[in-house]
Image 1: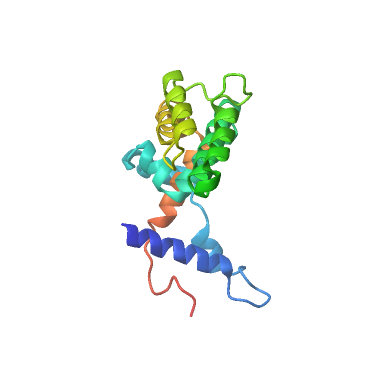
Image 2: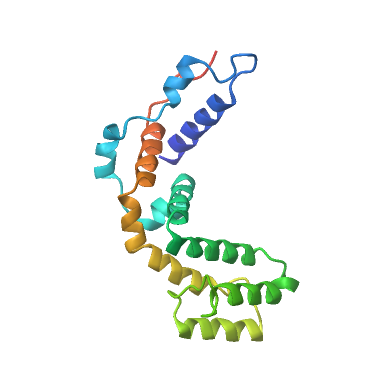
Length: 188
């Protein structure tokens, strides 16, 4: 299945790059191949796809992007995505700057007075994280907090996503990925 996804994604990228010249990307054949299907064609896929948050919204790049876009349209959820981005940024911060970056994340997202306070992370967990930050910051400092946010996003926000146009677009992408690749798919 993964090999099919890689091949399908490669085909999509090659097709979008085009061949050069004045008609670059304007071939009727490629427009037809890359056209998203009507959502009604994806109903079978909707019924059969595994509705798992981790699989759909975390592991698959297109699913992750569409779930992020969905969350960004919901004012209450946007701060959760920003927090997860900050945690990812923190994890790649050089060791000598971990303390400074950790304090920044704590102040911005885990302080009750903050405008983008993440209430889903328990106070006990915040206290433990703050203690670890003061003692010795590590790359995994916020992993439990990030897990709390993911646990929250798996609930009602994920179920809202499944009923949104963003999930419909995800199904259209999956439908396109599942189309067979033949020798006629590629330009000669």
